[in-house]
Length: 353
Image 1 (cartoon, rainbow, N blue to C red):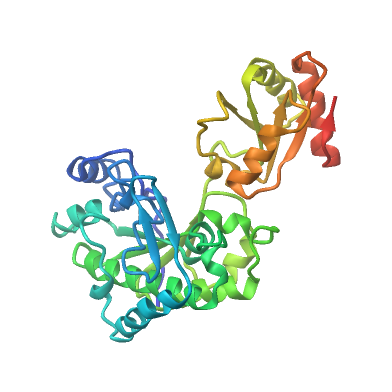
Image 2: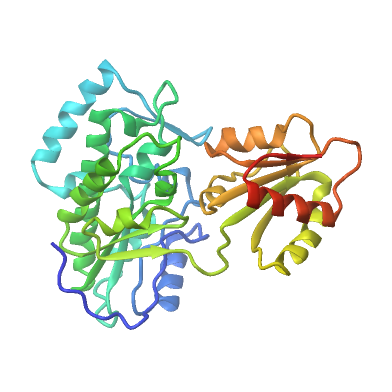
């Protein structure tokens, strides 16, 4: 159970990840930049093992990790049951230390706790990837989200709980006031066709974690979601991205970048705020999942009759997009693009020229 909340008076902290590769440098940066509420830094550029999903998977049954291909998955079935038995036995021992991540998976956390008491800080923050996002992003051998398997979902929730409890014991040695965040970036998928899980299941999974902690609890979702769902849980703090956030994301590739940037100026005159990302190539291409998850709506603009880029985006992000296409051999003008975006937002349909 969380202690009574005190007013933090707008003290700053961070989400978790930093771009450093050296844990000493990363912790120095955090302590200098966030002296009131320092957090332990996650270092995804240091190693794939510090990817936000891999980082907390070390003790889960059935996890398959391919570091060369930077891929994580879950192998479910009879072999999973063999691995699951000792996992659940370990959980019943009620010793969070059994779930502690090794230094290979959390170098920033180990470096932070080695610095000793932080009595001048107002609080110290930790974070764990939440069960909903983990279960939606880590798929099984049939490419099905592992969250949809009842036993695996139970294991994921219990793993998150014990990982958070262990962090809590470590952070309490640094400061008597601690915050534990359950990060749920893909909670934005709740309610869509790509997340077949009920409201009750989401609330139950999160509350099982919150209820097992004595710290103040928080959840960060970097995209839009059903905020009333989180407010039905027992969480103490809800964190979301606000600065520079636009509900609509426009994606394009190739020669449309210049006209689309001009179109954004035209749209702004009508108080239509959009973010724009231009992808130079389809292969290789950047990971667009986080940008798409952060938007309430995504529009893909392309000069292609079949909507090739839109198909690729939907495949990569498991998110339905709106499409603006042109295939008469002449590229879009800024005026055309501004008008097509207006029409799409007003009518919610594909616009082709």
